[in-house]
Image (cartoon, rainbow, N blue to C red; front, side, top):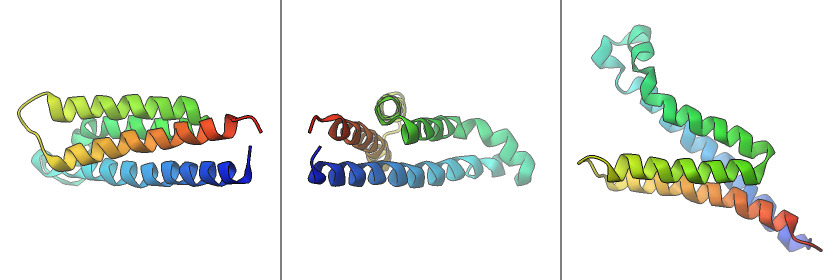
Length: 124
C-alpha cells in the first residue's frame, strides 16, 4: 500500500467515524426528547418516547462495529441507511428534503468505511 493510499484511507475512516458519530448522537438525542412532551414531559415522557430513537440506536451499534471491522460495519451502515431512506421517504405521505439528505449522508458515510477498508487491503 502506498503512502497516499494510507493517507486517503485514514481520512475516509475519520470522516466515516466522526461524521456518523455526530449525525447519530444528534439525531438520537433529538428523537429521544422531541416527542416527550406529548407523553407528559420529563423523564417519564422521555422513557415513553424512547421507541422513536431505536433506529438511531441501532445505527450507533453499527458504527461501533464499523469502528473495529470497517467492511462489515460499513456494509451494515449502508444497508441501514438505505432502509432508513426507504422507510422515511418512500413509505407514507411525508417526504422532506432534509430527511433525504440525512439518510443519504448515512449511506455515504458507510461507503467511506468500505472504501477505507478497500484501500487498506490493496496489495503494495
